[in-house]
Image (cartoon, rainbow, N blue to C red; front, side, top):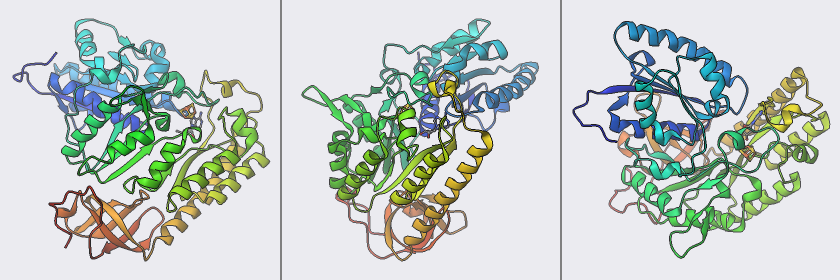
Length: 468
Ligand code: 5AD
Ligand code: SF4
């Protein structure tokens, strides 16, 4: 499948919408195409191949896609007039859900591929250039995609993502993921550890494990048969020399098992910030959403996490205006937000996704009501975020330096709670975890200055000197 090195360089442009998993998938598609001679292009006009990696989770995804496809038809024509090819591919969850519509409405698209088939891209590109018409691959192939992907090509940054799990069997009333990403699948622990070691060797210091339901992870154990849960996997990852921080996202409250909570207690490098979507604070709505837990059960999980790791902060996802949500239900959501004190959260207006149970449910909430609830919730969340950021002022925190800041002489990094931190300093600190005294808490970030000393972590590479 590899192409001789003499092949002239081709250019690839990928536009990515949606979640971190799509960002990861886009990087892996670039890896898959690199042996064919594809290098990154700055813009679609300069690209021999364009991939639109789409997200279907909330509304307007297909309108956005079709207007982009309209623009790209013109680009493709202009390139053809200049004697240049442009292979156009639509990938991701809209491709999975609306493949037939894409080929009907945009026949100039060459390839439509779902999230489970991108390891077959080279073969699809070859077929597309041989034949007229669109190549469609949106089945869920039996062979695991991950077994057929090449090793990561591009060097990772200081912070890297690693997909360990995909798909979801939970079927929340509102959600397309079980239909577009398919059933839950976990990568074997040995494959995850090998990829993590490669990322660290390439310079990654923080790894975020990704999965639609990452804490439902149950991958084949490294040895001795059976499977490992996420807690066990994190313990093994924590032993990798040079790796400073671990995170994982996105989790489901039902899958926060004892082993995973114990990992939060025992692993200092497992960062004290957890994205744990709850969606609503009302038991009636949670039941209608088919979430499989009550608000009290969610509160109990939060308590267990706090007992294990007292400095843990939680982020979440909320949907306002799910069919049947009353003013009292929404008030219960606001109470839960206040009580847990989420310092950060994503909130969305419910949008009907075709084919999901909630789309056909009675008692859809009127749009103006959804708008009002969203505004109220976001205003509360903004206040809590500002309050949390302000509460860090005066503290000295370990900050992982990730790159240059906005202004000359400034560097930027992340706090344990994922807050962006800006401080004066040298780029020589990139990749180091350094103590920073917080001087100001802004609405979305912190600013500070380097403090004396070093951050003690058992697996920090010992050859590195302490910061100046
Ligand atoms: N409408 C609004 N928000 C949704 N989400 C998922 N599906 C929908 C929908 N139909 C939100 C959920 C989920 C996040 C990724 O997107 O809050 O946790
Ligand atoms: Fe969608 Fe998450 Fe529910 Fe799965 S658990 S159906 S991904 S919202």
